[in-house]
Length: 354
Ligand code: ATP
Image 1 (cartoon, helix red, strand yellow):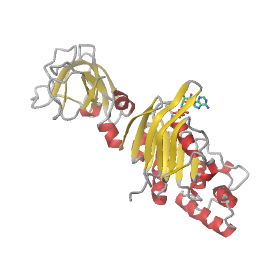
Image 2 (cartoon, helix red, strand yellow):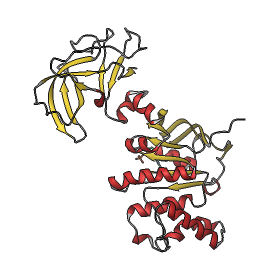
Image 3 (cartoon, rainbow, N blue to C red):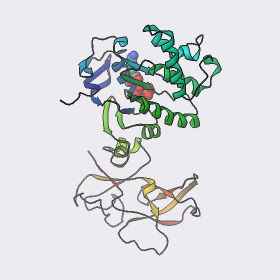
Image 4 (cartoon, rainbow, N blue to C red):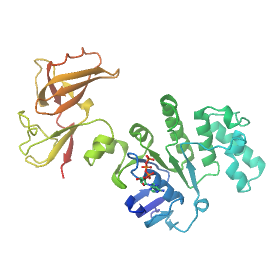
């Protein structure tokens, strides 16, 4: 018999008055998985976590943990650990006491608590800091303590809502790696909420892209980036250019010749838009052969040195503009300079207009 998913949401709905925060959400979280809910503000990420934790009741649908419906269980009976953006540690307790707080409530003996706190301090790279108070810690250290506290009595599921949101960029990036390592070491099924697409990409086994209380796409980070299911996903995750095509394969409104499409896309399809990531585009050097590439002519309207690349805006003359990542070692083209933008035909996302 196959094991049920660790968490299963079936047609879960949540209304607040007449507004729908979640509309018939279906979601399966597998044992040991790191799954991230990603989407713009108000799309229903936090509501989903709070329903799983039991802080919010769904107005429709079912929540199952390990195959058992949990609708009737209060939060403290669901074996769920939560970490929020504002890591509410107890200021009057030491770090070790904070970490062991839940264990104490469950009646774990002092020696067991002390040993477990020591193990977790090693894991969060804060060995020997157990006697400090939260006021003596940096923001990143406090957040690591909050994570250690959430996993001290291992929960069946760890729910994290923007846990790194209050940290500056450098610390945030370091914590992304650490948090992922802790999650892997403990093997805890984790649901993570962020609106930061890079954070979702680097941390997750799978990403759920949400919009307006609905799931737009579920997939691995590379699925979501390379094969987005909709225009919304394509533009929410990473930078992208859209080139709408006429039925004959020419860019709509442009005078260019028909473009080659990725193999398997029927010629003559209507309602297609090409999605082109800026890093897939190149400027064709003067006099270079086109051999097999797609080419569009345009004029540079802007160029910005970013460090890892040069960001070029290229006006296609038909109302369309392409963003192209140039090589940083190349000279910045002057505004107005004519250029030819090229790409390999297979390097394109095909989006179907509705
Ligand atoms: P953010 O990234 O801003 O935290 P989110 O994706 O987590 O957003 P939710 O907090 O789940 O979004 O909210 C989803 C929708 O439900 C929003 O439109 C929000 O205004 C609404 N909502 C959430 N909680 C309540 C509440 N207690 N009463 C009324 N409306 C609510």
